[in-house]
Image (cartoon, rainbow, N blue to C red; front, side):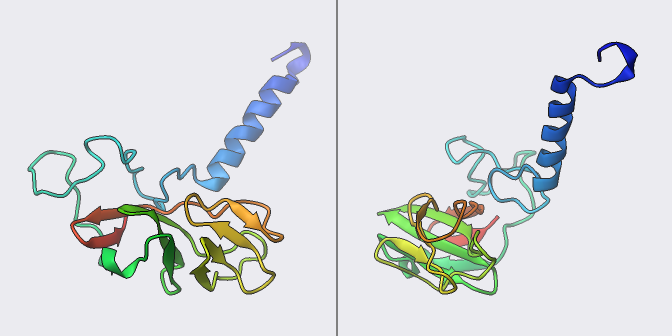
Amino acid sequence: MSGGGRPTRRTALAAGALAAAAATGCSKYGDEGAEPEPPPSSPAASRSGGSPDATDEAPKGPVLAKTSDIPVGGGKVFKDEKVVVTQPAEGDFKAFSAVCTHSGCTVRDVDGGTVNCPCHGSRFRVADGAVAGGPAPRPLPPRGIDVTGNSIRLT
């Protein structure tokens, strides 16, 4: 701090950034209040196989879909779970929030390589959730999934 007890601009900006991070939950892989999942490339990312190590947690949630339910280049919306699962390339599964970043509507479908919102026409790319068109200001946030064998589960 500078003299007089007033915070410096840098201190104020840092405090604001910390408050914003706390408000958004800092959830990089879509965990909703749980410990963050390791990145998919790390050895601990897949906890299947039954190895008895200390990082094993309770089993993942119920099966959301079979891998065969998600078309290559497309996807499927799960309205009850508010998630959309896509398969941009063979064997590459992604999951995003199904809540449009424009006005909070649930996306309707996946067609033509985009996730489509019925409310105001926003479209998001199946590969990364990025805005492909419409009024949406931000990409769809990623959600965590676990693909083991032919099962897809939310994490």
